[in-house]
Length: 178
Image 1 (spheres, rainbow, N blue to C red):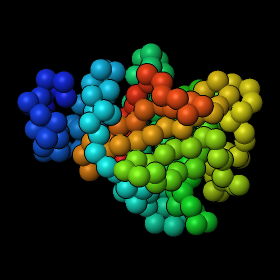
Image 2 (tube, rainbow, N blue to C red):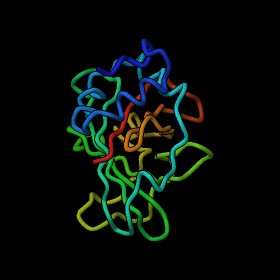
Image 3 (spheres, rainbow, N blue to C red):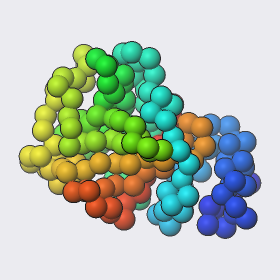
Image 4 (cartoon, helix red, strand yellow):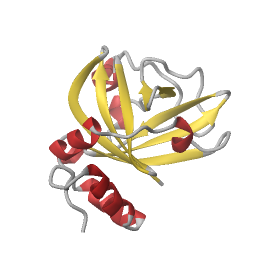
């Protein structure tokens, strides 16, 4: 059994127990974590490399997500791809028709990976929604001036925190690479 991060004797014990589970059970565990547990994982997050989160040139990698928002808004996916010398992605969630796809670029910043919504890519891969600004309409409320900073939990799983205008917000999320 995997203890909650705040109840584990140490985060190393927690990480070992979580890593020992099959991936589907890791995701089930992730989907049940409340904000305080995600906060603990963020505060003691491990280094993560951009290379761990993206695939080869043109390969779309899906990161299944869980955030601390209301249950109706808590599940999403980040689709990421290495393309044209960089890495980019979009958010896939049930309200994208209203909020937009939330295009972002990815970069390594020290021990973290940043999903930067303030720097949108020049174009989108075939089959993706066209690139639009994150600074207009409902997109501005959701993605405007935002950078998601991600830290490692276990291989294939990360925890993130939302920063807007460079300032931290009390919103957390987790990602599990498919």
